[in-house]
Every structure is written in C-alpha cells, then in structure tokens.
Length: 293
Image (cartoon, rainbow, N blue to C red):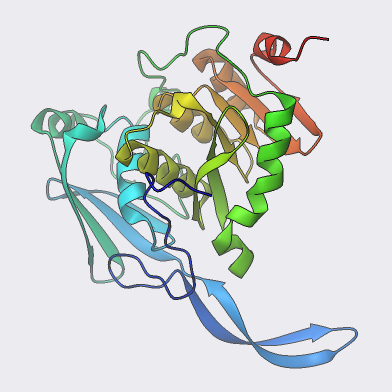
C-alpha cells in the first residue's frame, strides 16, 4: 500500500482533480467479439485536456494531460526541467479552469523566474512531448551540475526488480479502467512500490511522480524509478535532474537515452519483466548487487 505520507492519486472513477474534472468518461461503445457478436456497452475512456503551466503570470508550457494530480505534475515539471532547483522555491500553486482546458498558476522565487525568462523557452507539447520548444540543440543534452550520482551507488537486486514488476499492474488503477495510461512508480530498495502516478503521457506520469515525492519531502535517490513505457532520452534526463540514479523501463531504450544515462551516471534497465531484463549502463553496480554464494 502507498504510505499516507504521499499525496494520494485521484484515479478512481468518482474522484476528480481539484478543478472537478474526472479522470475518465463513461461512453457508449459498440463492442464486437467472435463469440458474442455485437453488443452495446458503456466503456471507460481516459480524459485528455490541455494544461497550461503558468509561472508568475507568464504561460510557459501547454501539454495534453490527464486532469488529475496536477499539483504533482506542475512541481515535477518545474524540477525535472530545471526551472526550480528546490521545492521550496515554489511559493504558491492554484489549479483553475481556463478557456479550453486547465491552468496551473504558480508563484516561484524571483531569481528562478529571471532564469526561466533567460532560457527563452515557450513549449507547446503534444501528450507530454519532452522536446517541443527547446530553443537550442545544446539544451537537449542538458545534464545539470551535481546531478551525476556518485559511482557505484546501490543497484536494485533481481529479487527487488521481480517484486516491483509483480506489483506494478495492481497499482495502475487508471490503466486498469481505460488501458490508456502510462505509469511511473517509485520503488524501495526492497522492491515495494511506495508511490505511483499515472497519465496519458509518459513524461507527465514521471513528472507527477517526481512532484509527489518532492511534496512529501522524499528523495528520488532513496529508491529507483520504474516506468511502463520505453526509456527515451528525456525520461533519463528527468530522472537525472531530479537526483535519481536508476531508471527501469518495461520497454526499450533509445540509443540517445543510453548515451544520456551513461553521461549522467544513471543505471538504465530496459525490457523489464519478472525474471528477465537488460541493463544498458552502470553494469558494475549490478554485479555488486548480486547476492554472494
């Protein structure tokens, strides 16, 4: 179970975000099966709405997201994109309806807002696009100072990975309802899923997880991150920027993600299944994690 210290996700059918929008809609569907033919049923369909992130009155990013856990999303995005370097630099946050979607208004420290303006970024993303609006190629390969973990940090054991993977599906409430949500989980060294966030976009799910941990005052370094998607470069970058040292993905990594993980000192594991996975970086950490005979 998720400990009470973490803000609880709002993905049950009757629960809504702070603005009152549901995570899903029940819609009429004509379903076909070979055995039963055509059948009219009600089906749960995931919601996807434009969400504007506004810093000190200036709109910085617009993305399509599931309208739940938006405070987590906003703080996690700010931290993983380097807009904030500490949660305490966020002074206030308010979620409200806007003309065509939702707006998350944030008040941040003046020095961070000045730095944000200097970056000259104006994102307009699609389903949590991690690259849209970056104004230079050098920004793509951003690895912030101090994000590279110390060498030979603990790695998850095979038993811990198996335990987490077995727990993953039961924790994915929104995905179970709709089949359309990505999940990002924070896992203890023993393999227990302690916090999980979901979203229609994989980057958004990870940002929600980072934000939830930051709001709880918990360091990403105390466990490892498990995602239900592929491991793209921006997923590695977000984990590194948030101080994480291990990213486990159930699908494949990209070559750029592997290079980014190597540069950032992040252990990157892909194709994770119970009893089977592939490590692409930091192999020496996995060797040390093996139990001695």
